[in-house]
Image: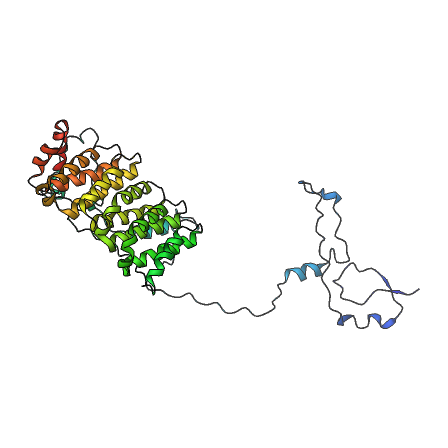
Length: 408
């Protein structure tokens, strides 16, 4: 058998003898480029935290284990593309700092944002702190001067309707405008139809009957006046309706009757005021707003004597403080509508009724009732005859306290 060693460079060492069958097999040996040895296999993950024992590691076998070709091949760098020339650094005349973070700021810190906001705030004067021991003895003259400037003059009287808002200028009572209804083609037939609809059980038909009553009161009062008592009783009955939509619609209808019929509604003021004041005690806001509008319309357009009697009968001794507050507010507006001079120098019957009532409500247990009643007393105190009227119509044991409230 013919064994020959391939004719290769003498510095390659360690190639084994190979059996050749073809003599020209190694004739073109220089055309074959040498390949690097195979890579070292990765160590198996055995799950242990200790390194494997060196003696038991699998050896990296191969023909090129100790050959100098491996060292030469792995030590020479392989350049795939030429390296670009280095770019010279820019020459800056002044040092430029771009978003240099401070030493105490982390990447997610909000300190820079807070610093920018602090810079945008207006400057405030820094007042040195005063120790607690000497705080009672320090006198700030500037604060006392400022306090004297803010103090209200004692001769300014607050308007009754503006006491709760902190205003001191007397303003006339202005009510919001009521919704206008279209005139009817046949008002005589509409009157009977309205009475029939108000007796129906369906709430939609009741609201339609109330709409017809409002249209008759606004455009056809001559048709409505002969049957006013029956219409008023039917509308007052619907004010007590448990369905809030029907009740609010009936309250608005009462406001229309007071606004368009005016003194013709004097005979119905007593029942209407009693029902409206009782309805004011409900928790529904839009019901209370409607009651306030109806009572204010009654105060402005009906006879003051009838209105006063209805308010005193329906709200002076009511168990609900909200109803008493509504009555007190209506008394304030009644005083404003009539006028202080007319109350104190006119008919004594009116002053004999309203002054003791307001004095009683001024010491009510509910704060809202006291607020409105004391506003009425301050409104009376703007007249020179106020003290004389208090001495004449108020109980002796309460006169001193009431006189203090006149100018408070």
